[in-house]
Length: 109
Image 1 (cartoon, helix red, strand yellow):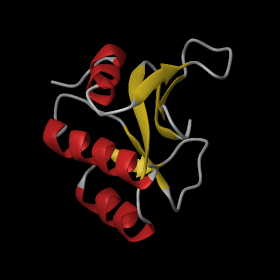
Image 2 (cartoon, rainbow, N blue to C red):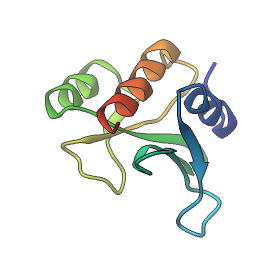
Image 3 (tube, rainbow, N blue to C red):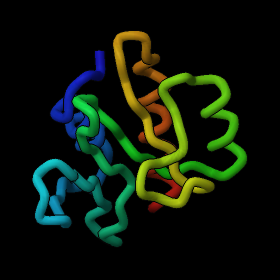
């Protein structure tokens, strides 16, 4: 079950050509980036005692994902049309979360 920052980071690190970064001088915010372009495809942080993962999505997919998954909401501190926040818990669909991370990776390549 995806429930910790290290779990989320490890899922991201399995993708080709990525690295972990802490650009905000705040260890709470982990940015997962593409090596070549340095673009962020996932922001991993804790808020209100819970894990949050911000991922990019196509606008039409963003709305759809928010309707079908209770753990997906408009992204915290990001463009709400293009980014979602995932807040995993014991009821979350880990495979769906992994697919959302992969889609964000592909969209930001």
